[in-house]
Image (tube, rainbow, N blue to C red; front, side, top):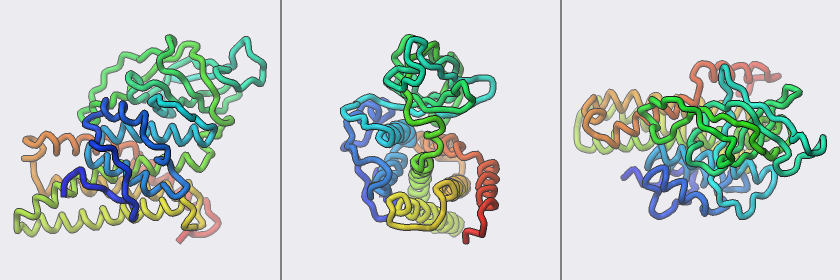
Length: 343
């Protein structure tokens, strides 16, 4: 079994380009014309997440570039139809200390105008992945009344400037995520204030990220499996057995969530709780797989196998989008707020 073999979530086959993108630049060139069905919901969720997982098993950086683009298209479809739009998109929604992005209405427009370019963005947005190579982005910004709203912006605008900040990451080194400064940049509102976080699709997108983590862990599991077929070392077999259980748990969590999103399974739980559970399950799987593969294989592949070393470094960085104990505490708070135990 190779790293390019399909990684299925549930029983759905992934949709895959032929050939698979060789790197981030090839992925960004390819996604402009990928089919419209790669969106969560309407029975396509498992296929979408299988696609992301398969790309991640091939190259996590490729999946990291593709996932926010597909998420942005899904968001735009939930708000309006971006028919014929072949731009590459990012989603810049992170906040950070000491920086802030503000949105104000165009001074020459009507007070309640929400038409194209009716807003202006000024300030700095942190963690803007691939801002130097994308065409456009969906960006959250603060409104004068203290709420936040989502906006579509053209990253080629003269008012968009990348902040010169070193990107020291060894993992996902092809995906610099540095701040971007906006100086009176025209923007189009996407959804009402607060809509970005309140829509069910917000949690679907978060699970899509976990599907990428899962694919990265599968690639490492396959490396361990190949090694186990060449040795009778019982400790290697023990680690492989534990990795098999962990990956099966993560796959079941993703498959169940896909059925919920597609409306074929009703767990009676809010999307918030479902997504937090799935992300925690998959993140814990990734950490377990990273540890066990490292213990089973030792230092040699980390030092001598460039592909393996990259996969390890990429997954270590990517899975840190799960905020460890902080997200566990958030999940616990969500469970405790329910009127009765959810199990």
